[in-house]
Amino acid sequence: MDWDNARVFLALYRKGTLRAAAEQLEIDQATVGRRLAAMEKSLAARLFLRTPSGYVPTPAGELAAGAAERMEQGAEQLLRQMQGIDERLCGVVRLAATDSAARHHLIPALQKLREAHPNIRVVLSTSTQITNLTKREADIAVRTVRPDSPDLIARHLKRLHTGIYASKAYVKKRGLPEPGSALKGHDVVAYQRALAPHMADQVCGESSANANVAMEVSNGLMLAECVLAGMGLGELPEHVGDSMPGLVRIWPERNAPYDMWLVLHSDLNRTARVRAVADAIIAAYEAA
Figure 1 (cartoon, one colour):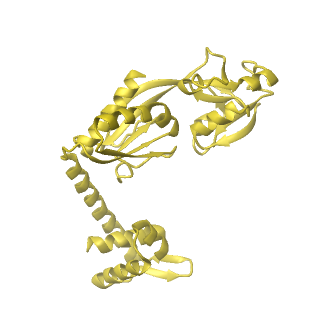
Figure 2 (spheres, rainbow, N blue to C red):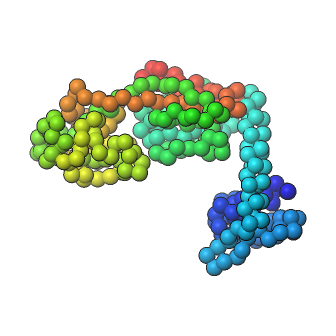
Figure 3 (cartoon, helix red, strand yellow):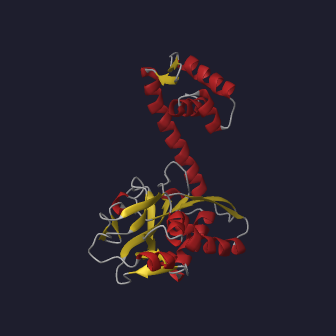
């Protein structure tokens, strides 16, 4: 099976339309069609049914997808291994993190890295979604969850804590909540349940069953901004809440711990540029 054809076949298998596959691969639709035709000819099998809603794999297509995915895994492993023996302090390193981690820890670290190694270019992606390092969606990730994959190396960066915060204007208008009241009579700003189900029904260990959810957000920066705007109480990392003069800490004795992890694929551990970025991040958290 030709890998170039298989790569196009996989994109079509996953996306379902010529247009979507072409956009993912950054080629034109005609090329996708030609590659598919060539693969079907070489295998002497029809791999898709063409329907009004898109391309639906046949039984032969499902079988081919399994073989093509194994080829993809082999190609990705080879690329990681080749990168792993690269000793040049130059090139691209893809880094994934939450927006809060990026703003308060990573950007200062990357500025120092830039001064020391100007030929390393970091591509930073911020999201609450967990990036798949095995599929090379990123080279390094900074996460709050330790991975369990044996192919990944995890380095504990720091144990941090969250607290409950509100704007000064909110406290002046609404007063302080009563401990043990499940935040009765108060508004809260929370993460969307799908993103942080463990935080959906509580704020820093206090039940929010009696609170009114004023806003649900998808990232930490928006959570902090909504709390600062006086929309409600919110659970924020201490280093975020304490750095915003317009906020006050509610029940300072209460906090909730969480851990930060630096994660990279074992095949990239010896790549010089990846190690340089990882070391800069480690140093930033140690100094914090």
